[in-house]
Length: 42
Image (cartoon, rainbow, N blue to C red; front, top):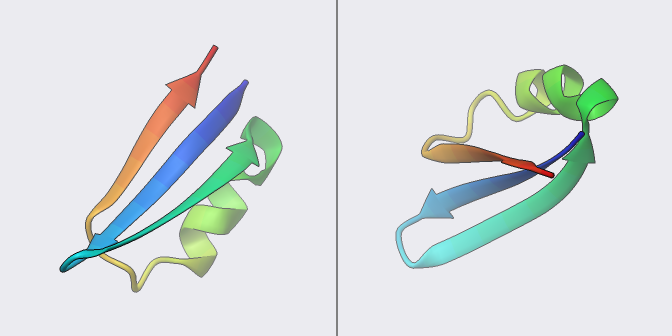
């Protein structure tokens, strides 16, 4: 399964598509960013 990660910082929005294998690594690396939304994609 793939995931869409979205970070919101004021009016700025950043996003990234990641696989299930990458998810934990990416979340750990981006831990300092707040307002992260994780959406599973089917």
